[in-house]
Amino acid sequence: MHAAHAERRRKLMESMGQAVFLQFSAPVTCRNNDVENEYRQDSDFFYLTGLDEPDSVLVLTANAEKPFVLFVRPRDDERETWDGERVGVDGAVTRYGADVAYPIDELSTRLVELLKGQNRLHFAIGRNQKNDALVLGVLGQLRERVRRGEVGPTEIVEPSTLLHEMRLIKSETEIDAVRRAIKITGNGYRALWGQTRPGMAEYELEATLRSEFRRQGSERCAFPPIVASGRNGRILHHRRNDRVIGDGELIVVDSGAEYDYFAADITRTFPSNGKFTPIQRRAYEVVLRAQEIAISTAVLGATIDDVHLAAVREICAGLIELAILTGSVEDALESGSYKKYYMHRTSHWLGMDVHDVGVYHQGGNPRPLVAAMVLTVEPGLYFAAHDAAVPVGLKDTGIRIEDDIVVTDRGPVVLSAGIAKTIDEIEHAMALGRSHSGAK
Image (cartoon, rainbow, N blue to C red; front, side, top):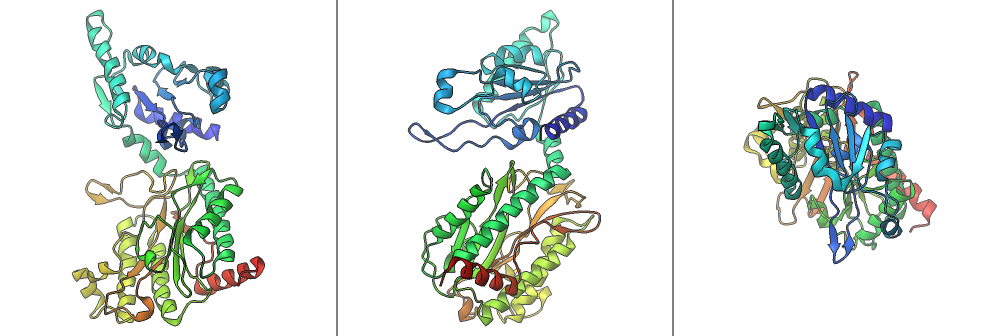
């Protein structure tokens, strides 16, 4: 991917013109006492460098001779004995293509020279007080040198204005990384379906997903897996995964592997015993139709609002079919009565972050979809136990179906199409998996 990182840097420097771009790596955070949380690099930093070490800083300048500068931790035999090998100053050049690299301790002094004579600085001020203080201190030093004819940036620009627009439109290499993350996720679902049976705990299914993801080379989950059985299926961001799964209950699993820093985000809903009941089938078909119609709406020039409205219309029609709502679809839309059962949006961007960067509106209006945008489509229905309008077989139940798609000039392409989704496909996958695993 180093060629891809270089191309991204080239595009960014071309778009920002005579300016300096400054990006700090993600900090190390403590879990407790002297135990650190698992480290994941800042997505913007990794997008431009491919380097996943902390205490690193990227500087891109308009200097044609040495535009790509990295500050990194120097090699240290004692620390590397404890924490593993470091890239080091030489490695930043030979392995990551920096034009020049310096020890991180030299950042404040070197940055004065790198910013000298530049008018604009692209830097995300306000996100980290320590980094802000360092940068503002350097700018203060440059102000003091005005009488000597040394000027520094007079304008600080939010870097996401350019960078996140770049990240929103995916290259083929990036889409391939999403595909790989999706493939791993699909294999995780197949393994999970082979294990699922009533009486298990939700965390047992979570363990199956995590194990399969890691076994296939995923660095980590793109987000903590949601394994929500029965009434937990109504909790959109259920995280505890500690409930014992009952017989005949629906299980909502929302999960995704991360591969080469790109995420998958797939949701499937399935019965714990491998067979949907008649009323579960009817409700599931409502969500599936809503999703299929919403996906078909994700064409060039449409908006995410259009995708959402398409899903909502079908959800309203389905709720009326199920006799949960009365009146017409237009009545449900106007009154918002459907929001009791479908309260979230249908789509979000997907990429290096599971809720990826990129604005949803431009000039106050929903932005039109263009080729190479990747997004999710995930309608759902959620039924409370105390709702008298809900049939008994759906009370305390959630249903959500989510796929990842890429917008193309030939229409939407479902990247996760290979993961069982229809009722027949899911029941077949569960029966096949259970026969292979010996589950009863």
